[in-house]
Length: 104
Image 1 (cartoon, rainbow, N blue to C red):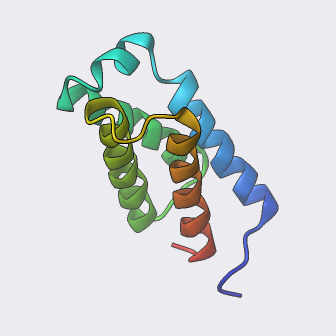
Image 2 (cartoon, rainbow, N blue to C red):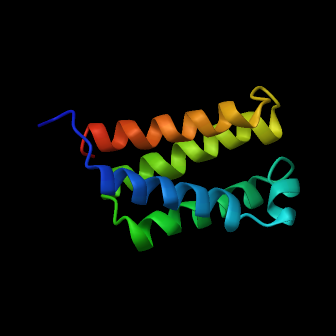
């Protein structure tokens, strides 16, 4: 079916998200990603690498992950449009769920 998600797959992707976004983001990255496009890209690349290693996304899903993460984190860290962390996390999780729902 088009709009179903395997629970195991969802849990793996959510684990990848939290490991990539928190465990693999150093304090330096957290502080500097709002000031430097290079650091922001580095954070997004390491975030996405966790998915590549453990969730094996398609090329399209990988591009969506890195691209949306870059935009959401830029809106939060650089432009301060997104303030509460729960909103930042919700946007990332919605992205993951949509990728899985659409089987990208």
